[in-house]
Image 1 (cartoon, one colour):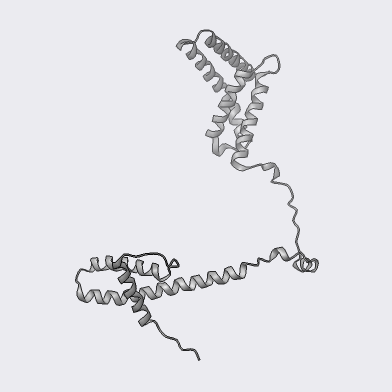
Image 2 (tube, rainbow, N blue to C red; image 1 turned 120 degrees about the horizontal axis):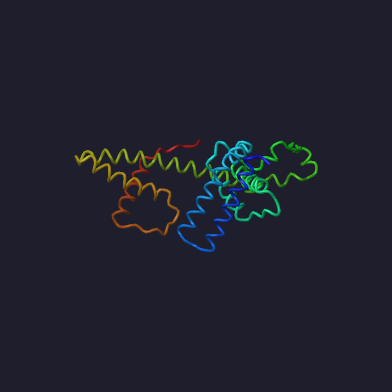
Length: 232
């Protein structure tokens, strides 16, 4: 056995002894001794941890790898049974397991990376011949598309009508008032109100008296200025 392995074996034996002393006589001195023993064990295990970190391609997350290996080292030292295996063998498996789990969390299961992907191409003509193409057809698709297009056109038309009305409204307010910022604030509020009720679908919605007059005058103005297209 190498000198480094012997040193690691001695360090874990000392740490186990320090833990035993701490359990027998808890206190600051025995706790400090246990901490020093584990620090020495960690120092001896550090080159091994760096080796496995490089081996598993985790050098870009070396701090995370060191953290999980420190947990593995602590667990291995507490569960180590000298009668069953050498500590170097036991802790190596602990390091491998933790680093493999870390790599899996970060990069996924790389064991599937080289497997050949099998794909199949379906012929639509063959599906039609077999009568199996019905699942491709959505009966509601055409109605939903037409409704969506109609709603979009209605929204755009409403925006245009309200904007034209706002221009006329701004001209009237501008002649009677000189406070431009106050006028724009008022106009923005009225535009929002008129725009909402131009597209409202709930006829039961009630308005305040002042808002009702604004909406009624605005809608009358929009109808009056709306272009009339004659169909032949």
